[in-house]
Figure 1 (cartoon, one colour):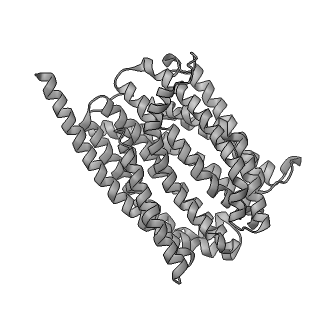
Figure 2 (cartoon, rainbow, N blue to C red):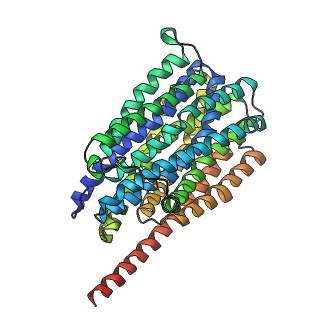
Figure 3 (cartoon, rainbow, N blue to C red):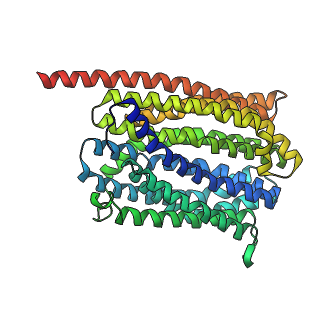
Length: 459
């Protein structure tokens, strides 16, 4: 990856990094999309069961992935400082950390899954499908988290097209396995929503194996000697990555978990409402891949420029990325506004479910706009390695303000399930404003520190 001087060069560099990440994120989210969509076409109980299972799994997965992607700004700043020899040990420690995280998830799931599902008081069929779906996915936890580390390294070098290629392999593998295991084609067992969990676990192993081959044999990764020397686990290296990764993970967890919390709170509603809510959230989450991909791109670009001391260039990338996300949010808003009926038809053939999905999608327009500001801003902050205040902001905005407001509106007014969505919109909007304020302060601080260091060097 090279520094760009002019605005046109920055746009080209930004698109070069962004587009493959975007395709990768769409493909990854499409795995969840097809799990939900194909399960829904098998049956409403399967759709609700997979929805509950996904609501429990996605916050855990994304939050812990956030801890592991703390490797991205570490590697990008090392490359910006021309310290290539330090990269391989960092990646190896990331792999060790992913194994530790996997063990924690598997043990925690074994202890907590049954009590959590029992607490939710679900219909027996829905509870059974959710339990077996999550049990099946657990067999893919180790390769999924290890792949996250390898992908973070690959992206930090600027080779995001490699990640895109790997993820594009995953999508047809997952859809094909879904067809075999959900519907029982070609003599395979007809497992319904549970088959979606098995398909996802197998897919995680496939993408990890392919990533491993690229990192070990392809350039420029081969020249960085990643995974070619054994490094014992290092507590100091864990501490460095956790110092950056834990706040990132908590920020992601707080945002994704609040959506899942709403789904869990809505378990008191009927199966049709749960299914419609989850279908709308699933499609909105697919659109969320745009600001999320911009966020990941900005972490790489801003981290590289900040590591090189080019603060003006880092700031320009921030403005470019956030502005692009805001413009794209208007496009996605139009999609939700005018194509709601067609979107709803992708998830169900039940007229009642389709009608409810259309109503939920109208509310989704508003938090798409807030996401377009908040998420890329977090990416810029991560590039500067400023991560602690962001997770505090996310916690306050989503959990102290947004969720309680949604609960009050849903439980104590006539809004019902839609009250929760208004609470989500409120929390996301507050978070966007606070994160922008934090970014302005960080950029001023970096500029002041850089000026001070430059003056000291001249003396």
